[in-house]
Length: 204
Image (tube, rainbow, N blue to C red):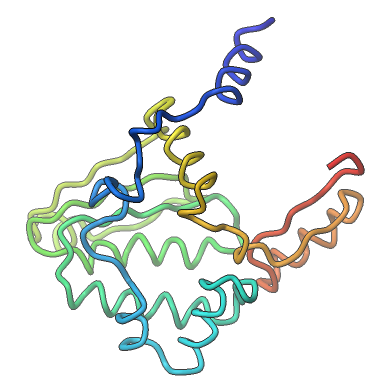
């Protein structure tokens, strides 16, 4: 058995110890000190957007990408009102969402409070221009770039959260398609009509 196969087998067979109950003991390390929870959502979102978002969170319907900009704007307004100390920004490499993700990086430096901490992870598809004087120096920020994760504990924690129903990712799935319809799936993602799509083989 190769080293890769051994590692995959170890992950598949691993069980998180019963003492690691993140539902009770996760605290700020997992869930954060500030959360865009239902009460905040009701305050910052227009009623129709709030109702649609809650239906997604409650598992009644998939997330609708059409409301993404409104939700993102509300989160930004709420975050700026908090004067957040630490912001974590994930950017990806897909060109269709590149403009929004580059904007997210710039917004992070605008939102975080003086003396705050910005954590960047992910790889944008093109360079991001930042005003070093205004966005970093004058705000006395600490910027941390992260490549990778805490192996293997991050994976164990994520698996525990999913297996115990603490986090439900199903509302993010717009639809499920057979693998041979991959071109249709990619087109829906590129157009913004879908959030996540599961491609299934005949055996899955």
